Figure 1: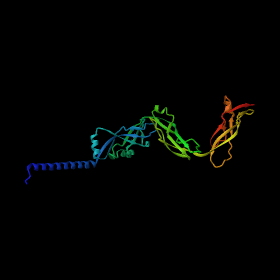
Figure 2: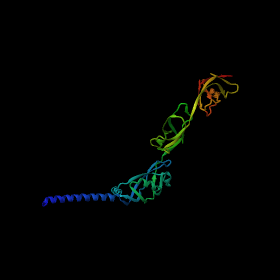
Figure 3: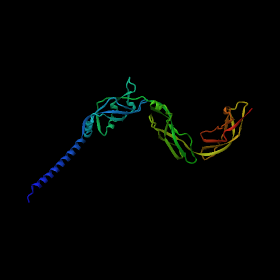
Figure 4: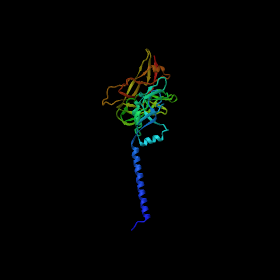
Length: 322
């Protein structure tokens, strides 16, 4: 049966549609392939650095443009051409030893681009592969900052297991930090706090690293410090002893009421009682400075083996006798 003219036309149209779709798909695949190829080009960027130059702000933007030659894929090259009137910025962190002061211009520092090529390449790793730096050096103007050294206070809550105790204050190393900032921000900072350290059920000495609490508008030369503490097992003991008088002038003496006090002390657990006998005394000079005649007695032989002690009653009353 002969094919009608209209049917032949429909078939021809369908073939043309298929051919057109195939052509568009081929063009699309070709564009994708072509855009993925590497192309030689040059680019320019503004550079913002972060560093830790003593006495200066931690950030600055380069006075010059960084011009680079290298290779980027088609997408990157096309995007750069579309944005040719727009200067983009890259952020890099640079070691302060890379900066050299510019003579005669306070706060201005120079850096050789060959010294920061790794940092620049890393910042552009997803876009562009640098091959040559047309710009040989960059200069940066850093704003001056005030600085001072303040102590570090550790915030902590350490609770020990029964019959264990901290035998010293928690040590922080270093115990101070230099801070930088605008004068009005630095002036009123008298100490830097750590993050909160919370430990419970502790039965042995410990150490670690703890972060410092940030302060708005202030930069610290350290972000974390070391801490350590000493814990020992103790045994609590009690003794009733006489109260002595120290440093009394010749011909003068003090009558102490009561003359005997109770000492409750904690000492290292050794498994044996030992021969330690507490010695309690008042100082005549404390009495001379007291208006009421009442003086606080002290444990005179509290060596390293005595972790803590309490004396009762306290204070005691002293009466002059000639």
